[in-house]
Figure 1 (cartoon, one colour):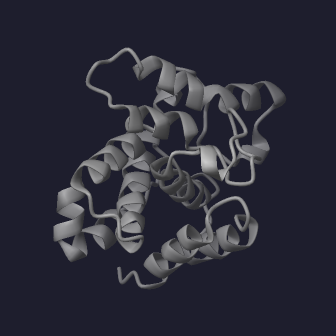
Figure 2 (cartoon, helix red, strand yellow):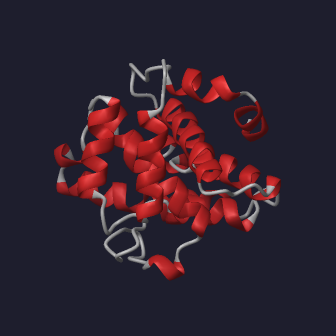
Length: 189
């Protein structure tokens, strides 16, 4: 999939152009993976193995939501206290569910476990700061934040990017925010 996105220029816009009307978690994973690969390309990450790990980790980043019963298809602000507790556990629980599988490399597990971490330490589940977060998990996390706004908060693409630029400053690397902004602003669908 990562090779396809890198080799076919139109692929990105077409995949991102498929609206997630039913707010499906699997579709969200595909969108986050697609955004992550596009962002990695902007950041000049070209190692095929890293891109494969990024693709798989991004596809599976919300793996635990298939098991925890939480309805994530709505803004986080609507979660009850109990739902928020479940939500904050989904990265570590998702990682736990796949860590004993021999076919998952460490970077994939790191992406699953760390995709909600933020560079200023305000993320979860561990409150890691930038130097402790896997760089691939940061790419996935920034892409995830954008698609959460677009898919689960129903904010139009460019407005969601503007929102993320304002509210994500200091939480996500500036180069990631700028890269995603360039990607979104250059989309022709």
